Amino acid sequence: MANFTIADIKALREQLGTGMVDTKKALEEADGDVAKATEILRLKGAKGNAKRADRSTSEGLVVAREQDGAVTLIELACETDFVAKNERFIALAEKVADAVATVGADSVETALAAPAGEQTVEQLISDEAAIIGEKVELRRVRTIKGDGLSVYLHRTSKDLPPQIGVVVAYTGTDAETARSIAQHISFANPSYLSREDVPAAEVEKEREIVTEISRNEGKPEAALPKIVEGRVSAFIKQVALLEQDYAKDNKLSVGQVAKDAGISVTDFARFKVGA
Image 1 (spheres, helix red, strand yellow):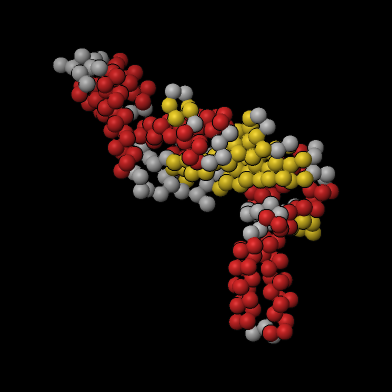
Image 2: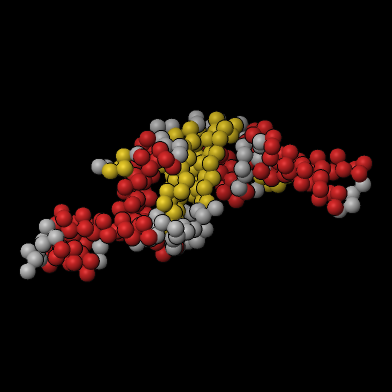
Protein backbone atom coordinates (compact mmCIF):
# COMPACT_ATOMS: atom_id res chain seq x y z
CA MET A 1 0.00 0.00 0.00
CA ALA A 2 1.24 3.48 -0.89
CA ASN A 3 2.87 5.38 1.94
CA PHE A 4 0.61 8.45 2.27
CA THR A 5 -2.35 9.66 4.30
CA ILE A 6 -5.59 11.55 3.79
CA ALA A 7 -3.76 14.60 5.16
CA ASP A 8 -1.16 14.25 2.38
CA ILE A 9 -3.93 14.20 -0.25
CA LYS A 10 -5.56 17.26 1.31
CA ALA A 11 -2.29 19.20 1.49
CA LEU A 12 -1.39 18.45 -2.13
CA ARG A 13 -4.87 19.36 -3.34
CA GLU A 14 -4.69 22.70 -1.55
CA GLN A 15 -1.25 23.37 -3.02
CA LEU A 16 -2.14 22.55 -6.62
CA GLY A 17 -5.92 22.89 -6.75
CA THR A 18 -6.29 19.40 -8.24
CA GLY A 19 -9.19 16.99 -7.86
CA MET A 20 -9.39 14.31 -5.16
CA VAL A 21 -9.21 11.37 -7.56
CA ASP A 22 -6.31 12.74 -9.63
CA THR A 23 -4.36 13.65 -6.50
CA LYS A 24 -4.85 10.22 -4.94
CA LYS A 25 -3.82 8.46 -8.16
CA ALA A 26 -0.69 10.61 -8.45
CA LEU A 27 0.35 9.82 -4.87
CA GLU A 28 -0.25 6.13 -5.50
CA GLU A 29 1.87 6.25 -8.66
CA ALA A 30 4.59 8.12 -6.77
CA ASP A 31 4.41 5.71 -3.82
CA GLY A 32 3.70 8.57 -1.46
CA ASP A 33 6.52 10.83 -2.70
CA VAL A 34 4.90 14.28 -2.68
CA ALA A 35 7.50 15.87 -4.96
CA LYS A 36 7.11 13.12 -7.54
CA ALA A 37 3.31 13.26 -7.27
CA THR A 38 3.47 17.02 -7.85
CA GLU A 39 5.53 16.46 -11.00
CA ILE A 40 3.04 13.84 -12.23
CA LEU A 41 0.10 16.19 -11.71
CA ARG A 42 1.84 19.11 -13.40
CA LEU A 43 2.79 16.97 -16.39
CA LYS A 44 -0.82 15.86 -16.65
CA GLY A 45 -1.91 19.48 -16.48
CA ALA A 46 0.62 20.44 -19.18
CA LYS A 47 -0.80 17.74 -21.46
CA GLY A 48 -4.23 19.20 -20.84
CA ASN A 49 -2.91 22.63 -21.80
CA ALA A 50 -1.58 21.22 -25.07
CA LYS A 51 -4.98 19.73 -25.90
CA ARG A 52 -6.60 23.10 -25.25
CA ALA A 53 -4.11 25.06 -27.38
CA ASP A 54 -6.48 25.50 -30.33
CA ARG A 55 -9.45 26.61 -28.27
CA SER A 56 -10.63 30.22 -28.49
CA THR A 57 -10.36 32.64 -25.58
CA SER A 58 -13.06 35.27 -25.87
CA GLU A 59 -13.51 35.97 -22.14
CA GLY A 60 -11.18 37.30 -19.46
CA LEU A 61 -10.34 40.58 -17.78
CA VAL A 62 -8.10 43.63 -17.88
CA VAL A 63 -5.83 44.77 -15.06
CA ALA A 64 -3.81 47.98 -14.70
CA ARG A 65 -0.74 48.53 -12.54
CA GLU A 66 0.93 51.88 -11.86
CA GLN A 67 4.62 51.81 -11.01
CA ASP A 68 7.50 54.29 -11.32
CA GLY A 69 5.66 56.88 -13.43
CA ALA A 70 4.10 54.34 -15.77
CA VAL A 71 0.94 52.26 -16.04
CA THR A 72 1.00 48.74 -17.43
CA LEU A 73 -2.25 47.41 -18.85
CA ILE A 74 -2.76 43.69 -19.49
CA GLU A 75 -5.51 41.54 -20.96
CA LEU A 76 -5.59 38.00 -19.58
CA ALA A 77 -7.95 35.80 -21.57
CA CYS A 78 -9.78 32.56 -20.85
CA GLU A 79 -12.50 30.49 -22.49
CA THR A 80 -15.60 31.17 -20.37
CA ASP A 81 -17.09 33.93 -18.24
CA PHE A 82 -17.40 31.35 -15.46
CA VAL A 83 -13.61 31.24 -15.19
CA ALA A 84 -13.26 35.01 -15.83
CA LYS A 85 -14.99 35.70 -12.50
CA ASN A 86 -13.29 32.82 -10.66
CA GLU A 87 -11.17 33.94 -7.70
CA ARG A 88 -8.20 31.84 -8.79
CA PHE A 89 -8.19 33.37 -12.29
CA ILE A 90 -8.52 36.89 -10.89
CA ALA A 91 -5.65 36.23 -8.47
CA LEU A 92 -3.54 34.94 -11.38
CA ALA A 93 -4.24 38.14 -13.34
CA GLU A 94 -3.12 40.22 -10.35
CA LYS A 95 0.14 38.26 -10.07
CA VAL A 96 0.78 38.58 -13.80
CA ALA A 97 0.11 42.33 -13.71
CA ASP A 98 2.53 42.77 -10.79
CA ALA A 99 5.28 40.85 -12.56
CA VAL A 100 4.79 42.56 -15.91
CA ALA A 101 4.65 46.05 -14.40
CA THR A 102 7.87 45.43 -12.46
CA VAL A 103 9.82 45.03 -15.71
CA GLY A 104 7.79 47.65 -17.58
CA ALA A 105 7.00 45.20 -20.38
CA ASP A 106 5.49 46.66 -23.54
CA SER A 107 5.02 43.42 -25.48
CA VAL A 108 3.58 39.99 -24.76
CA GLU A 109 6.95 38.37 -25.46
CA THR A 110 8.75 40.51 -22.88
CA ALA A 111 5.92 40.03 -20.40
CA LEU A 112 5.93 36.24 -20.68
CA ALA A 113 9.67 36.18 -19.98
CA ALA A 114 9.32 38.37 -16.86
CA PRO A 115 10.15 36.72 -13.53
CA ALA A 116 7.22 35.78 -11.31
CA GLY A 117 8.69 34.38 -8.12
CA GLU A 118 10.88 31.40 -9.01
CA GLN A 119 9.37 31.00 -12.48
CA THR A 120 8.48 33.14 -15.47
CA VAL A 121 5.08 34.65 -16.18
CA GLU A 122 4.67 32.13 -18.99
CA GLN A 123 5.29 29.22 -16.62
CA LEU A 124 2.99 30.72 -14.00
CA ILE A 125 0.15 31.01 -16.52
CA SER A 126 0.77 27.47 -17.78
CA ASP A 127 0.71 25.99 -14.27
CA GLU A 128 -2.44 27.87 -13.30
CA ALA A 129 -4.19 26.99 -16.58
CA ALA A 130 -3.57 23.33 -15.82
CA ILE A 131 -5.33 23.76 -12.49
CA ILE A 132 -8.14 25.99 -13.78
CA GLY A 133 -8.85 23.57 -16.62
CA GLU A 134 -9.16 26.12 -19.44
CA LYS A 135 -6.88 27.70 -21.98
CA VAL A 136 -5.46 30.88 -20.46
CA GLU A 137 -3.35 33.35 -22.43
CA LEU A 138 -1.80 36.74 -21.98
CA ARG A 139 -3.24 38.39 -25.06
CA ARG A 140 -2.08 42.02 -24.84
CA VAL A 141 0.33 44.18 -22.85
CA ARG A 142 1.00 47.90 -23.03
CA THR A 143 3.01 50.21 -20.77
CA ILE A 144 2.20 53.93 -20.91
CA LYS A 145 4.46 56.62 -19.45
CA GLY A 146 3.57 60.24 -18.77
CA ASP A 147 3.72 63.21 -16.43
CA GLY A 148 0.12 62.49 -15.49
CA LEU A 149 -1.64 59.15 -15.79
CA SER A 150 -5.33 58.37 -15.57
CA VAL A 151 -6.76 54.84 -15.43
CA TYR A 152 -10.36 53.84 -16.08
CA LEU A 153 -11.59 50.25 -15.77
CA HIS A 154 -15.12 49.46 -16.93
CA ARG A 155 -17.31 46.46 -16.12
CA THR A 156 -19.61 45.49 -18.97
CA SER A 157 -21.48 43.25 -16.54
CA LYS A 158 -21.79 43.75 -12.79
CA ASP A 159 -20.95 40.11 -12.02
CA LEU A 160 -17.74 40.12 -14.09
CA PRO A 161 -14.34 41.77 -13.48
CA PRO A 162 -13.38 44.77 -15.66
CA GLN A 163 -13.63 43.99 -19.38
CA ILE A 164 -12.45 47.36 -20.72
CA GLY A 165 -9.32 49.14 -19.53
CA VAL A 166 -8.07 52.60 -20.53
CA VAL A 167 -4.89 54.48 -19.64
CA VAL A 168 -4.40 58.13 -20.57
CA ALA A 169 -1.06 59.93 -20.33
CA TYR A 170 -1.21 63.71 -20.15
CA THR A 171 0.53 66.89 -19.11
CA GLY A 172 -1.26 69.41 -16.93
CA THR A 173 -3.03 69.23 -13.58
CA ASP A 174 -6.71 68.61 -14.33
CA ALA A 175 -6.98 64.96 -13.28
CA GLU A 176 -10.78 65.06 -13.41
CA THR A 177 -10.86 65.97 -17.10
CA ALA A 178 -8.17 63.40 -17.85
CA ARG A 179 -10.34 60.73 -16.24
CA SER A 180 -13.36 61.93 -18.19
CA ILE A 181 -11.36 61.59 -21.41
CA ALA A 182 -10.39 58.05 -20.34
CA GLN A 183 -14.10 57.29 -19.91
CA HIS A 184 -14.75 58.76 -23.36
CA ILE A 185 -12.08 56.47 -24.85
CA SER A 186 -13.69 53.40 -23.26
CA PHE A 187 -16.89 54.26 -25.14
CA ALA A 188 -15.61 55.79 -28.40
CA ASN A 189 -12.71 53.39 -29.09
CA PRO A 190 -10.34 55.66 -31.06
CA SER A 191 -7.46 54.03 -32.91
CA TYR A 192 -5.04 56.96 -32.95
CA LEU A 193 -4.25 60.00 -30.82
CA SER A 194 -4.29 62.78 -33.42
CA ARG A 195 -5.04 63.45 -37.07
CA GLU A 196 -1.31 63.34 -37.80
CA ASP A 197 -1.01 59.85 -36.30
CA VAL A 198 -3.41 58.25 -38.79
CA PRO A 199 -1.17 56.41 -41.31
CA ALA A 200 -1.16 57.98 -44.77
CA ALA A 201 -1.77 54.56 -46.37
CA GLU A 202 -4.91 54.11 -44.28
CA VAL A 203 -6.20 57.56 -45.25
CA GLU A 204 -5.50 56.88 -48.93
CA LYS A 205 -7.30 53.52 -48.73
CA GLU A 206 -10.32 55.24 -47.18
CA ARG A 207 -10.20 57.87 -49.92
CA GLU A 208 -10.32 55.15 -52.60
CA ILE A 209 -13.26 53.45 -50.90
CA VAL A 210 -15.36 56.58 -50.42
CA THR A 211 -14.56 57.70 -54.00
CA GLU A 212 -15.98 54.44 -55.33
CA ILE A 213 -18.99 54.65 -53.01
CA SER A 214 -19.69 58.23 -54.07
CA ARG A 215 -19.51 57.34 -57.77
CA ASN A 216 -21.82 54.35 -57.23
CA GLU A 217 -24.28 56.72 -55.56
CA GLY A 218 -24.38 58.75 -58.77
CA LYS A 219 -22.73 61.85 -57.35
CA PRO A 220 -21.73 64.42 -60.01
CA GLU A 221 -18.12 64.00 -61.09
CA ALA A 222 -17.41 67.70 -60.57
CA ALA A 223 -18.60 67.47 -56.95
CA LEU A 224 -16.64 64.29 -56.14
CA PRO A 225 -13.45 65.91 -54.74
CA LYS A 226 -15.37 67.93 -52.15
CA ILE A 227 -17.65 65.02 -51.24
CA VAL A 228 -14.72 62.61 -50.92
CA GLU A 229 -12.66 64.96 -48.77
CA GLY A 230 -15.67 65.49 -46.51
CA ARG A 231 -16.04 61.76 -46.04
CA VAL A 232 -12.32 61.30 -45.46
CA SER A 233 -12.46 64.02 -42.79
CA ALA A 234 -15.39 62.21 -41.17
CA PHE A 235 -13.31 59.02 -41.14
CA ILE A 236 -10.38 60.78 -39.45
CA LYS A 237 -12.77 62.33 -36.94
CA GLN A 238 -13.97 58.82 -36.11
CA VAL A 239 -10.56 57.20 -35.55
CA ALA A 240 -8.45 60.04 -34.07
CA LEU A 241 -9.12 60.74 -30.39
CA LEU A 242 -8.49 64.49 -30.41
CA GLU A 243 -10.79 64.94 -33.42
CA GLN A 244 -13.71 62.97 -31.95
CA ASP A 245 -16.87 64.59 -30.63
CA TYR A 246 -16.63 64.55 -26.85
CA ALA A 247 -19.04 61.99 -25.40
CA LYS A 248 -20.31 64.37 -22.71
CA ASP A 249 -20.78 67.31 -25.08
CA ASN A 250 -20.82 66.58 -28.81
CA LYS A 251 -20.52 70.27 -29.64
CA LEU A 252 -16.88 70.06 -28.55
CA SER A 253 -14.00 67.89 -29.74
CA VAL A 254 -11.91 65.95 -27.25
CA GLY A 255 -8.96 68.12 -28.26
CA GLN A 256 -10.88 71.28 -27.42
CA VAL A 257 -12.01 69.87 -24.06
CA ALA A 258 -8.41 69.03 -23.17
CA LYS A 259 -7.21 72.48 -24.27
CA ASP A 260 -9.90 74.24 -22.23
CA ALA A 261 -8.85 72.22 -19.17
CA GLY A 262 -5.19 73.10 -19.65
CA ILE A 263 -4.07 69.56 -20.32
CA SER A 264 -2.46 67.85 -23.29
CA VAL A 265 -3.08 64.16 -23.99
CA THR A 266 0.23 62.58 -25.01
CA ASP A 267 -0.67 58.90 -25.29
CA PHE A 268 -3.38 56.38 -24.51
CA ALA A 269 -4.16 52.67 -24.53
CA ARG A 270 -7.50 50.87 -24.60
CA PHE A 271 -8.05 47.12 -24.19
CA LYS A 272 -11.41 45.39 -24.47
CA VAL A 273 -11.58 41.68 -23.68
CA GLY A 274 -11.99 39.64 -26.83
CA ALA A 275 -11.79 42.64 -29.19
